[in-house]
Amino acid sequence: MPRFVHISDLHFGREQPEVIAGWFKITAELQPDLIIISGDLTQRATDTEYLAAQQFLSQLPWPYFVIPGNHDMSATDLAERFFKPWKKWQHYIAPDLEPVLDLEHTRIVGVNTARAAGFYFDWSRGQISDQQITAVQQKFQETAATRLKIVVAHHPFWLPKNSEYRDVVERRDQAIAAFHDAGVDLILSGHVHTAYTQILQGVLIVHSGTSFSNRLSQGQANSFNLIQGDHTHLTIQFMHWNGQRFQSTEQREFQHTQGVWQQTAGLNSV
Image (tube, rainbow, N blue to C red; front, side):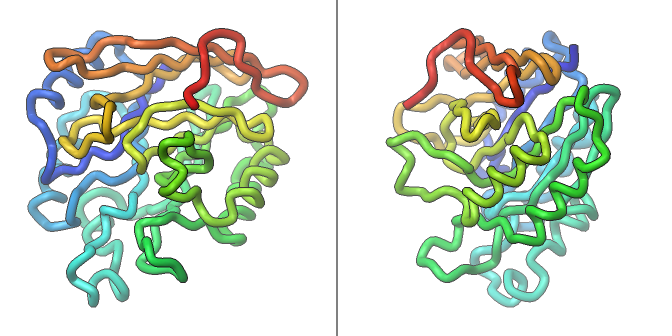
């Protein structure tokens, strides 16, 4: 069965080297098929931070799939933010902001939910456009029903109560309905630095906390997720940093039945 390591919110510029070293150690033991990174590789989108993120990616002995987050565009250089927000990302990380990857039993589609601005006070909030929703549907249109279908975005499509003030991605309801119709199994995200799972309209949502940075939410440790399985059965393991190493703190199991995902073991976060 495919095995994915899901990390997020690396925030180079606020990274903790000992946590990164611990992550490399445990990931070498897990030997995943793919590393999935759901955005915010940098803290302030500076060249120095991008170089550190680039170096990290170059050191990975495993294939990886990466999309940007809101911190990956400048918050201080407004000319850059509004006119060339992804110039550094495309120079240091990848030319494609919304990549698509095909593995033997899986298709993974990236969605860039970060925006330079919006009609709201918190510009860190994410959006997904009607065009992006349609593009995701089209990218899965010819995908066999027997393949695991994963969407990777930075911003949340569901939030636990203690994070609801952050807001879900705009057009969430339209996106979830369309994703369900397209047969999407998983949405992997980050942004709020909290690890959790939730099923919404039959689609399984999985979030990672901040994997390496010291920007920790209250009561949360650095974390990443280990995802194993196929289109019929998935296991999600939460891996948390205990101050010395990453260890598994909880495992949840999910079964795909009659077109929707259902949890069969473990308790949901609230």
